[in-house]
Amino acid sequence: MQVIKEAQETGKITLVARRYELNPNMVGRWIREYKDGKYGNLDVAGLPDLDTKELAKENEKLKTLLGEKDLEIAILRDLIKKKNPHLLKNLK
Image (cartoon, rainbow, N blue to C red; front, side):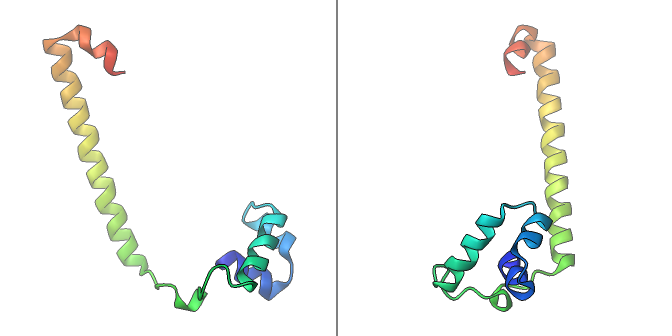
């Protein structure tokens, strides 16, 4: 939605497309489809306002979970290496 909004406001589809590393033809297509109502009642103002602090908190939670999973995998690999070293070759 942000790309469509910027392209409509500035009238410079190519510039906006370059900024977002998109093909200008695709941006033009999105604008046409938006005008034709293909995206329903979508409006930038109607999108949920995501709080930066909330996103940062969720990001930290996910990083912690990922770290725990990485540690768990390392422990399991170590156990396999000690008990059945021949199985470790198949896990990589």
